Length: 219
Image 1 (cartoon, rainbow, N blue to C red):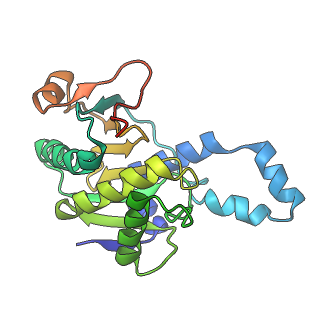
Image 2 (spheres, rainbow, N blue to C red; image 1 turned 180 degrees about the vertical axis):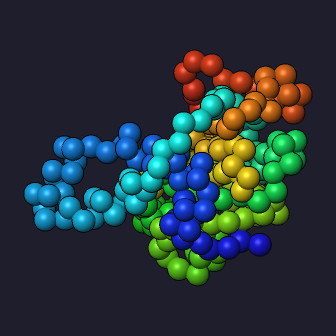
């Protein structure tokens, strides 16, 4: 079951998530861009995105990796990625998840883009939210993973107008992932490393070091 929830509810009840979002927002803050907003008398619109600016930042030990799959068929990639992520989540006994972006921005981006997979992703998102705009967060269960991974993969890959980082945290705040435009998983574990290099290899993942690239076939 998918629950629509507010960003404020998530970041106040989940201290690690609140800390991570605040840290990223401070890193994204740009005085020059703020000045453009001020010049247009729209300073409030800029600060609306930085809704976690004042959250406490907690010092944490983290373990970071970029991981990917050897799967070059674009049409079946999201399905395969969902399957492998569910396996990974089962390994650390993660069941409930939270989806939230780094800035308070609309999950719906450029609706004029007629690329079929992107249009289908937004259709699914509209069905879930009951709206054509949504800036808050989602609480989901394992059964919802495949639908959301399909949505997130295509909107991240095809629509640069959405938030650059859309995160999936497990509800126990063990891990955080986000999908990049290449379909790779940027993985962070908190406090302890459960997904070691050997465990990830056993689960069928590759660890990516160096520059990322698009592995998909052109057809």
